[in-house]
Image (tube, rainbow, N blue to C red; front, side, top):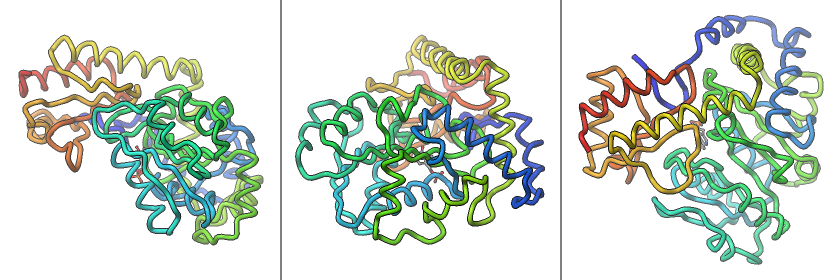
Length: 355
Ligand SMILES: *Cc1c(COP(=O)(O)O)cnc(C)c1O
């Protein structure tokens, strides 16, 4: 059994060991120090504009998306949402639910987000943009340069769900003037699901404190910001995953640090794409994240190939939902996988599906 999914991923054996610390008491100094150390290292990897704005929630990524919407955006604002698939749609649903005005910039499957598309939304009264920088449901990686330039020119806040690009592609909050970043434990970090991390800019921290709207009390950022300075959270966190995180950050450092880590993932995605092409598999023409490769099944049999891979070969890949169910399968390149694993997967795909 091998999993080629993007979260949870094929985990590293050390993680299971680290998780056993679940039972340490989280109000003790040992745990506070662990948290402070982990968040300081994550802050550097994120290019966070201020370490004081880095904290974490016990919630999956969608919880953190909802928390960002409710803590960062006021009731009288108007948000622009880049909606290129499942996760863009999720931001729209959250805004809708909380009655915050928004417009989706919808990208039909197969199209690339371009400057002209953004320009249509210039000077229309938006106060912020929400984007899933890598729209995991299609594999499209949006151009952060374009997005950051647009937000700067419009003088609006920029909120980025970086869940499926962080630790697979270059990312830097400071360089692009990003006001809030969301990441979660089970994607690029390759940990158990259950923790999300948020990093805020200084102006966003001020904005959160001054908004009159009432975010859910459990997710109220100002309470988290007040506690995190001493390595604590208002409520009991998922302690075990914090230990896994220390272990993973040590691993990344042992293996040469962030840029070598990114290079390792890039090599896997490049290898996979080259080998897939040789075997006449195709993937969409829009820019892709190194986290995954979406393969196109022109005969419309993606779902049955997904099932056969799982049942006959013990390989689990990411199927798609909705209108792409029979068109795409997504192959993750993160986690404890090596080039031979990708060869084995492609052999199996070749036997099941001769393009
Ligand atoms: C995985 C993912 C999420 C979070 O999904 P959860 O199931 O709540 O963890 C959010 N945004 C993106 C872009 C993702 O890939």
